[in-house]
Length: 132
Image (tube, helix red, strand yellow):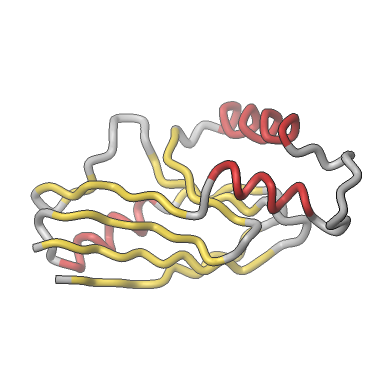
């Protein structure tokens, strides 16, 4: 069985959004007891990560990614290359196991969407639940 929904998020530039509750609700609506849930962000300057949603930690992540792909660097793709590079490092999707109708996330794990772009964007997040 396969169930899918799209979450639309209006996101500020260089910001994060916790979608754990929305994904959990989609898993419940799917009525799938055992399987997997894939969360995919459409867009080459966004990413999906699983981590703790703690403001200082997210700022540390921003700072660390800024060292990997600095906004001050001169790139051939001058407009927002660092946004694309950060997205490539983090990745556009995550897969989480489902057991007994629940996401098997750890105690502090949450599903977070990142908008690394230089402008505010509406992000489309495709949540697909597969199983039985």
